[in-house]
Length: 285
Image (cartoon, rainbow, N blue to C red; front, top):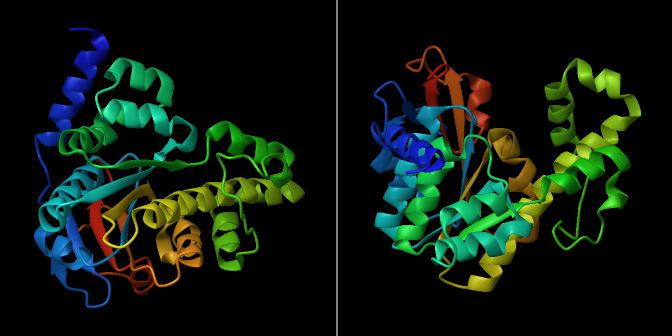
């Protein structure tokens, strides 16, 4: 066994050894009620698209994601996985791997996996492979997003791997982005427009990828579960708002991750606005 294969095996075992830690909690933001994973799946099953907004480095959140996908698959029979972590230009490689056309080594060589792929995303990809599920490589390629941050939005307009329609006029989302940038926002000055546009290109492309999939599958399409950093989905902004603009009437649920040292605490008032549900996970795994 190669070192690469050994690494993936160890990561998979770590991810599966404890599906959910007892210190993680799921809360319905409308009622404040605590839910079990099966109860959350029961609530999510009637939606068209579920956004699982994550903290990228949380083992607890990733185990929860896998469990929810498994439970939705039991209830709906068919689930499609959409990921921020894979980009449109590698969709063909992803499809080949899922259908057995190439091995894992070649897939990883050509798909630019995130550094935490083995530990956090491989279990869901392997579930999709076993079950024959569709997986959407939803995001704009990183080199194109970088080009926007350096040269402006015009640098990628019309590129087939980016969304065609890109709207950078979202006030509340821009405000949150500026706040998240902190002191860097002042340092960047007028370049903040281009940095925000690079963020929006990702949101628009992910939304467009999901909308296209739903349109192609038509009535009876699988429930789409989109994995993304929570900034892309919190408060129904980012990718969520752009999907709804493309698919009016689409039923969307947002689940947001809250890393905290006190997973037993009550929801703060502003946290009730994050999405339909939140899961509290320990701030340190």
